[in-house]
Image (cartoon, rainbow, N blue to C red; front, top):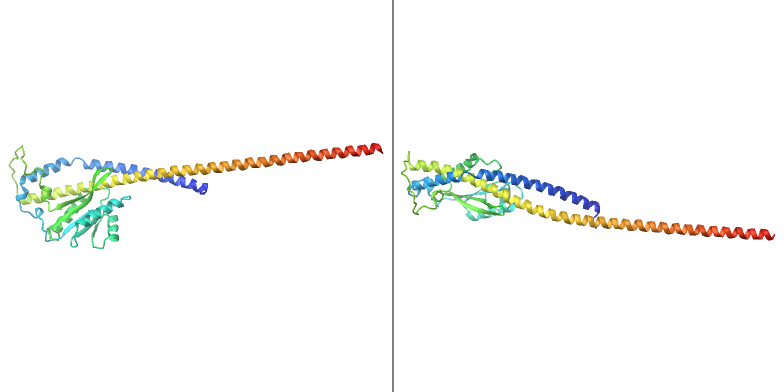
Length: 316
């Protein structure tokens, strides 16, 4: 039987843990709303930019950003989280990323936890980059873009893939694999090849289409990485909230079980104490009655003795 003091300590610990997880859940929910607000407002920009690039006819333009060199290895960038409670999500990102990489391809892991997991489970070299962090900025998105573009233009890689968790809902995140270089498939509009009702105006391009493609692809990739970072953080927050919610329910169940055991032991102890007190009082009462009866017997004996002495004295 667990001692009552140990149950009381377990109850106190479960209550404190419940409060701590509730605080973490509230903080993560606030963080999620912050990232969600940053995600809005860029759809129009991407639509206009993609529409403009489609109007240029990118399929007819020869540019390094639009052509893949299959003779070169590809780079696989895997974005993992440095936050807690996300080991499952990180492992899925790494497993899907490794499935996309051949033996000669370059592996890049963003995030310290993902890098540590990669070192422990995979026996192949990889490059490490710091995690996204909470301060998502275009500067960081531009730095990742420039890193991959530099490798691509130096012909160290022929293409680049990004593997990251895409936010769908609180209960669903999907591991997304997107090719960012070359960017030909990004620039092709879904409605390209279909009949468009509105006529596109003639476009004057200065100095040439190649320079315009170079600038706009860099701008689009920076926006793309910014969106990927936001999607990753939203997925992290959603997965962590669901994990914390599950932990919260488990601790509540454990707390109810501890309360039941505590009150069961408390009632058993109280019942035992009551029985002991009652037995003690009963024994005291029996002893008292015996003492009184014994006193009565002594009194009666003394009385009889005095009566006997008085009778013999009178006779004499």
